Length: 544
Image: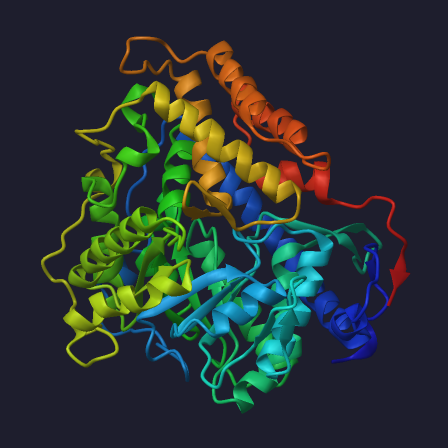
C-alpha cells in the first residue's frame, strides 16, 4: 500500500492487549484507501435505498425490474462459483467470533463456519477487534482458550472453511474516525472496517492454506448494493496484489426488495459470487418495514405461525434455488436455531426432530446446504442432505424448471392458519426485551426459550409490535392492540424477570418502548442502540 493514505484514520477506541496487531499503520492505511474510494458511493447507496423505501411506503408496487430484463433473459452468463474449500457446503454453523465460540465452531464438524460480525455479534469495540484477533489466530492455527472453570479448548485437525460476515452498509464504527482528503471528519463505515481488516490480515494466509477470503454479504436491498460490493472487491484485490476473483461472496437474500433482484445481484457479483442464502427473520422484518403503512392486508400473524411452508415464503425460497442453479451458484438454506439441552431430554428431542424436518424440506427443495446454530445439530442436518444428494456435495444440476414465481406470489402475505394473539404480543416482548438486554451487555447470540437468537429475532419481534399497533390489529380474543396494552406488557415482563445488579434491563425496556411505541418506525434497532449505549465517548485518541 502507498503511504499516501496514512494519518487520516483516527482510533478513538481504547487500545487493549494485542490491538496493535490488528490496528497496524498499514492496515489503517488500507482502510483509509477504502474510504477515500467508497465513502461517497456508500452514502449514495444509502440515499437511494431510503428513497426507494419512501416510494414503496407511498404506494409504489414492487416488481421485477423492467430495465434489467435483458440480464434475466440472457442465458449465456454464470457466476464464478465456489472457491477452494467451498465446494461442499452441506452444513454451515453460524456464530460470533469470541474465542470460545470460535474454537467450538472450528471443532463442530461442519463444512463451513459463518464467522459473524453482524447479527450474532454485539458490536462493542472489544468484540470487534477481539474478533479479528481470534480470526487471525484461528486461520494460523494458534488459537486456544481456557475457561474460568479451567476447561481447555483447542482446535482439532480438520476445520471448516471460514466465511466471514461483516456488518451491513447502513452501520458505522464510531471508534474510528475518517478524515476525507477535503478535511471532513466522520465515523467510518462498519462494513469497510470489518471487510478491510479481515482481508488485509488474512487473505494471503488463507490462499496459502488452500482456501480463500470468503464473505457473507448482509442486508443487500438491490443490485446496486451488489455492484458496490463488486467494486470494493476488485479495488481491494488490486490494492493488495491478490488474484482477481479470489474473493468469493455469498449474498443473503433477507430483504423483500432483493428478492425481486436475485438474478441482477448475481450478475453484478458474477466474477466473485459463490451463492445466495435465504434469511427468514430479516426477510419478514423487511416485509413489515416496507409495507408498514400500507394497510391491514400486509399484517403478519404471530411469529410462530409464519413458517417456511407459507406460500409467499415458499415462493421466495423456490425462486432463490432456481435462480442460483440456473447461474451456477449455490443455494444455502436458512437457520435452524434450535438448541439441544442435555439436562432436558424433551427439549433435545424437539430440537432434533424440528431440525431434521426443516433440513429435509430444504434438501428436497433443491438447496445445496444449510445453517445450524449448534454443533450437535450438524450431523442431523448433514444426514438430511446426504439422503438427497446421493454422494454429491451439491445439487446445482437441479435447475427447478418447475418454478414460475410472479410478483404477486411474493407479495401475497396470506397465512391461512395464522392469528395475532395475546400470547404473540407477550412472546415478542419477552424475546425482544431479553435479547436487547444481552446485546447491550455485549452478547449478540443468545439462548432464549431453547432457541439461539440473534438481532434478527429482536428486529422481527419489535417490528411486529409496532406494525400491530399502527395498523390497528385485533387479537383473536377481540381486543385491539394499542400502545397502552403493549406498554403494559413491556412493564409486566420487565417486572417478572430475574434481575442482576449489573443488568441492562431498564435500558433495554426503555429502548424497546422507543422502538415500538414511537409514531415513526425506526429503521434498525441496532443503529439506535449502538450510538446510545455501545460507543465509549470518553475513549482516548490514538492517531496512526
